[in-house]
Amino acid sequence: MNIGLIGAGAIANFLLKEINYARHEGHRITSVYVRDREKYQRLEAEFDVKLYTDFDTFLESGIDLVVEAANVEAVRNLIPATIRKKDAVLISIGALVNEALLTELTKLARKHNHLIHLPSGAIGGLDLLQNANALGTVKNVSLTTRKPAHSLIDEVITEEKVIFEGQAADAIKQFPKNINVSIVLSLAGLGIEQTMVRIIADPHIDKNIHQIEMAGDFGEASFTINNKPLPSNPKTSYLAAMSILGTLERLGKNIRIG
Ligand SMILES: NC(=O)C1=CN([C@@H]2O[C@H](COP(=O)(O)OP(=O)(O)OC[C@H]3O[C@@H](n4cnc5c(N)ncnc54)[C@H](OP(=O)(O)O)[C@@H]3O)[C@@H](O)[C@H]2O)C=CC1
Ligand SMILES: O=C([O-])CC(=O)C(=O)O
Image 1 (cartoon, rainbow, N blue to C red):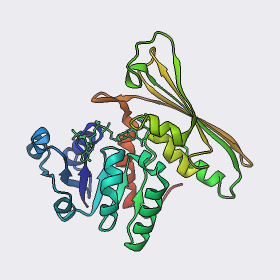
Image 2: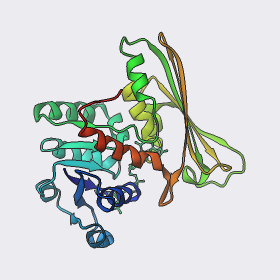
Image 3: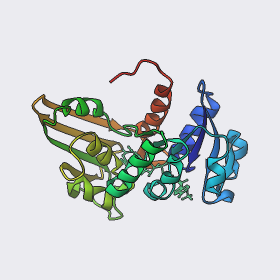
């Protein structure tokens, strides 16, 4: 499968290294869409890929699937055109807080017979949440995210500080680079208004910690994920990058788990 990648940052470099160096069976990133060719020129030789700055040419470059590893604006601006022609894997899932965009992408995917894959990113438990809510009987879902203070705020603090408390719908608007996980959790469960989020800036930790609590007719469940960050972007957890790799690997399997 030839993959087209949008973005060339921390997650994209992880994928280029793991897929093109480690030669993951059946997968290869062949095309990378960037805004600034000069800035990322070195990638062509390093990973044997071709860079594109024209999106239509990128889409027509012989790729089978597009992986977005850029930001929420890139999802808004580029994925409607993508999904008319290709399947896509999105990681800046926060963009789907916009219900008009979500509806548009759903309709386009159906009309053009393409799939949109949303990896679980830096969290887990989404299989359980979807199963537990199969009868619509999950009553509450909450996410508490704790990150190193410097990756959330400019202010220097010595004690932990709650910097957001409220609905996922508002959390992603205030922290579009830090809380995409709240939107995939919302989509799997109770939606952006009923999924409650707390974000804590903690000057004493070096991990991105996500704590999920849910309760309903099925019982209760809780998950804590202590994520190591990617060194090249401490806002982003290593697991988020790995979840794209996991999603790609599962595409070819005839037995689906979960
Ligand atoms: N769902 C989840 O669990 C998680 C999601 N994320 C999200 O994943 C995304 C990528 O994260 P990460 O790799 O760490 O981010 P980085 O900031 O390291 O890299 C982002 C890259 O995207 C590029 N980019 C931005 N806009 C565009 C565009 N319109 N077209 C092409 N390229 C573009 C940037 O290029 P340029 O140099 O031109 O700016 C940069 O190369 C972010 O949105 C992040 O919030 C991160 C962690 C977890
Ligand atoms: O990587 C993480 O821990 C979570 C994150 O940044 C996001 O959801 O946007």
